[in-house]
Image (spheres, rainbow, N blue to C red):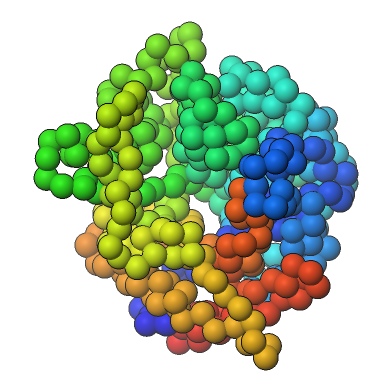
Length: 439
């Protein structure tokens, strides 16, 4: 890879990221049913109706995985906790689940891996989904109780914590586009989920402050929005995409308001008294995490709001069909610091690519991933040179894993998974990263 650790300041954090449902193996350890289990069991939602019952069996093999992280020279592990493992019905603690996360954190610390936790990465307990899930105004309270439960057990050992991974996916992707659980396509549900996830975020931050915890942040996903041409209609369409995808959550937290063009669609569907919730939503943060993968080229179309679509790209793409556009990461790091966060530390909390990796004679060559990571880390270096206060970079993902509606087809890992035998095989990108971090 075209960088070395010595290119970065002392204390810059290099890590890898995963999420609970994607790797742990949910059908063990007393975990409760989630809306992802039922979503995956519904024909047509997930490739081959695959689920996270076993995944990578990280639940039993985490020490092997952490040994590989330690051997690579990584500094930190960004993981998530499963609400349904900690509280199977969403409300009642499960001692077996709490004990698991105790063991998990201690194993990280034993290997010198700093624990960067995300409380929620999309697996909502089914009993809470039955009560309306993210559409319910009760979700912030339920989420605050979950936060107090899990962080009351492991919060004393956390290097950093964020409440919710990628609020846009929890809200828009899952309630407007219907691609993720609960699989709705309903603008009223979307407006309420987008708002309630922000109130839950703020509630969790306040709860953790009450526990005496520090270094609390938020993790948001970003896609650079490029108009298809120079027309005013295309610019307005790209601006709307930018605002409901990239700015909605940052605006709420740092400006106490949602973008006006998004509210043109959402306003009739918002919950009563939503304007009064910004005092909670704006709970102060210590850092902001950016998940970045791609750019989208946006074109206007006839039809109901938001009345736009994605245009094809001419650039190379990943196995996901996502355009490879490192400049977007530079753009977001510099824009976020300039327009929202100032000197607040920024982290690239996810960045990586799916690739059609194959194992041959015990070796997995993935030059495409090596090039992708090198180009995006160069974008981080350029952003830092231009004043963005970037303090760390986490690669997605440590392991090939369950890629939600795409099942086990798309491989993002530094480490190849044989999903039949569960054998782990470090890829060429793993070895290249290990070499870069040792220089």
